[in-house]
Image (cartoon, rainbow, N blue to C red; front, side):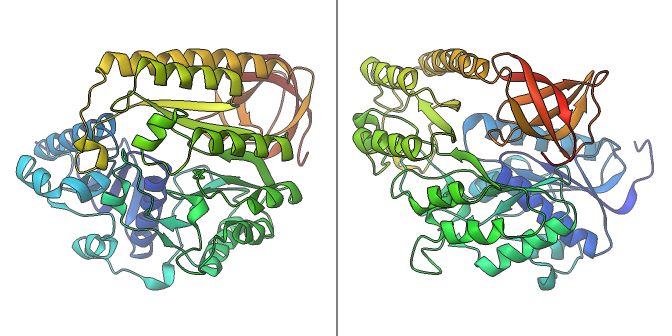
Length: 441
């Protein structure tokens, strides 16, 4: 039974998964707003006529979260809290026939490349002139910029090509235009995302063109930080390092998922690289750019990972001391190359190995953070929580990396602005300090 009147032409968009999904939701919301819909992101009001759930289908935990969210909104529909439930995104792309059979209460399912059909279902026009226009779900001062869609890499564990298709670069002029619009609306930090940044341009320009793109984006007036996420190690374009070094507003930060170091595992994972080449790349980056913060992600428990393989990975992480690191226990995904292998590492072993590396990384992070005490950093402030203003240095990305906290009672900053902060205390993943000057550092 309805407890309140639902607002006609109001759409609540719910986003699950990665930053690529956030970007897609923002594009959808921009199109809906241009069609005179009232749009909210993850609203708690429960007065929207329609909910659109943008799902993730990458690994088992993410899939389960998406399914649980769909079921919760189906229950809300039964109770009259919403009239229509639509599902889009990666889970829907990958498992639509199964979902239609198992959860028929959903009004319609859409794939990752069916935005025009979704809009048509909502009685909205797909406005081509709005390509690149978005309604940001992030704070206005930072935004994700998706430079390509899909992936051509053959990684054995990955289902992304099943859900996103082959690699398709967005033309450089379109990305610069997007960056200019974002800057005009107050965005100061661009986070470049794709399944693989380093592949950018091969399809359009017949060469790896990431360095030129970064240069053009760094030249956009008002953009203070450009940050790079998801750089594949095999075939990494070294000229990108020169661009980082030569442009003060390109962050000294590189997110490069390496996944493993054992040659046995790298070969089984089809990563197209060896331990020797991986180590050579990391050494080259750090030798030529010692100030860079290197972030990576790893997988534990891939089929066939022996105690020896894991020990090699563990010892390597201990020696390499990454600035930022995350670990995923392996998820056995249908229709991937690895699905034909025996998933022979027990779940508890996968998790124990992941936990062991993360516990070690916490100590590495603590040790590295102590070096920052007494130093001053340019900090971009994102939010207020409790007694603290919370921000980040150029070495940290939102939600996944370290944060800088300054006490509200002793400092004043404006959210979305830069200040210079002197660090006086450091913990495993947080730095504490005081503002020594506001505005641009």
